[in-house]
Length: 178
Image (cartoon, rainbow, N blue to C red; front, top):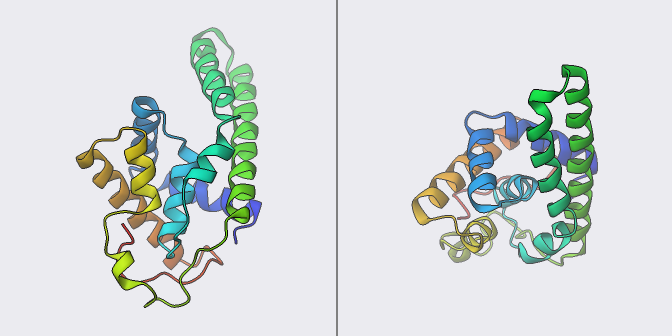
């Protein structure tokens, strides 16, 4: 299981990977995607996670509007603020993002199942197009081509992070889970 610090550090690494930030922000702006949830699902999915995204969305729900409103306020105030004042707004937003991650982790820990016992476990399930990341993106209205591109990007970059040894999660399984 991810610790709070691991989740934060892995999320930052994944978000900083080439094209991930812009793709996540596009999904956030166009479809209301929760970026922390996208990052978490990608990190878990590349490791064979088979849980549902629904409890995670439910856990994020109380804080999502607060974060959305804060982002809108921060963007609206940006041209009117001194850089140091704007930096304080960003710092507060990051504290809200950490709270979101705490909510997601708590919901994840409450889920029963969810890693296959071996890389070979449930190979038929791993070849199906359905997975938590794809299901979540579909549920918020991301169209098939955009959804497939975002999934491929997130899973590829999450796999690179895992391969680089930045995680204590179970080993990466062969093939894409989505």
